[in-house]
Picture (cartoon, rainbow, N blue to C red):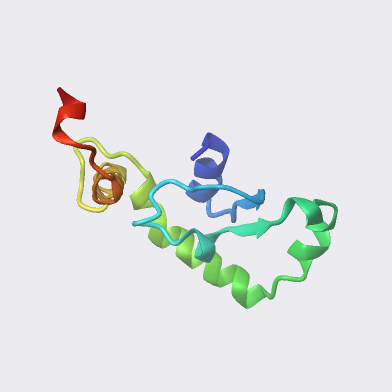
Length: 108
């Protein structure tokens, strides 16, 4: 996650992502669809009208989702349950489960 997205979340702003292909961090811990506005690159010229068309209730829902997700993207010292340290461990576990191990000789 880039610093601007993190900073936006810390102050309660809804991150606006203009991208077709993007992989967000901590996808096992954070439902990014609930707290961002994603606009296809082909519609980037419509960004202002798209943002203005979002109902106030939906904006409030996204802001509430941001509040719930803040801990999962913030590093605490010492680590606390549910912070970015634990989110990172979940991601490593997910990637490890999806890893297709090669034959034993490959590793030697």
